[in-house]
Length: 388
Image (cartoon, rainbow, N blue to C red):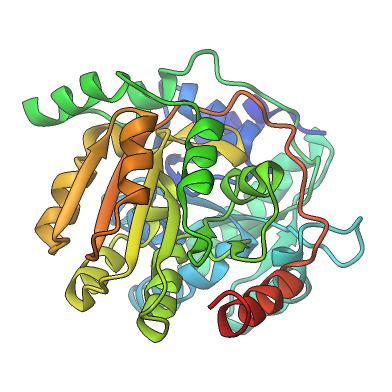
């Protein structure tokens, strides 16, 4: 295994000073090391395509860029890799985790297809790649090959990172990310950061409050990560869907369902990181304004299931944002009684509920024993049949 400090320093010596990406558990040690470095800037991007664009901008400004993400988010990066980096001949170093590797122990279901095709995707977009070695003495030669290609061809170079390649590395403190990656630029943002820590609720208590207050005819959609697993652990029900992968798509999924099922309510349980990844969905939902959609955002300010890296949510007013997009009712929830009152409220109308929660303490959550396709099939039958 490779010490993340060694990897980071080897990159720094070769001029890589700007890192951007989206967290993955395989990347946690390297991201944490970069966050703590005084010599490297890390920008936590909302999605993988944004990370590519950020790194491209850094390279145009004279600093080599590194882009880090898991292969399941590769699709988000395809457009800027092919139309920005390739067109403008901007070289980047891509560190892509290889989840769902077909020759390794079975991974989560959402990684299966992408795991099988990741090398072919890199080949298809003409990005040469190699698997990251597991011996520290082999790292310099690998990076030299990458730099030689980048300097000679002016195009990206890929490194596939397999599970267990990098030794673990925890953040020294929870404030490290905010200090290095989320500098505040104005008084309003500083105020939002100060307010964000106040009145956080326990995530499981919040999920239980939603589940117990929902009508029997409501559909409940939970975003990917710990949210779906925690909802399943509380009580598995046929009217619930636990999303896997497709990060940021929960609200759009809920929009589509609510529009074709106008007689039943759809409750979307979203997350701050998920919402940030595809924030444009807020405008689309508000424009369509389905009367039967309740959009609940659990905001714990971190990517909890990938190592606890912070999001930029402390500097963002989600309630104000949803209002400006056109949600007719947007509210910050401060206690469980208030949340239950909103879920039980019989009034129709699109609603946005922002709930600040604590980062999860209990991470030993069961995974659903029913497969994702069967969960979807079960929900489809329920929506169209007995659940009406």
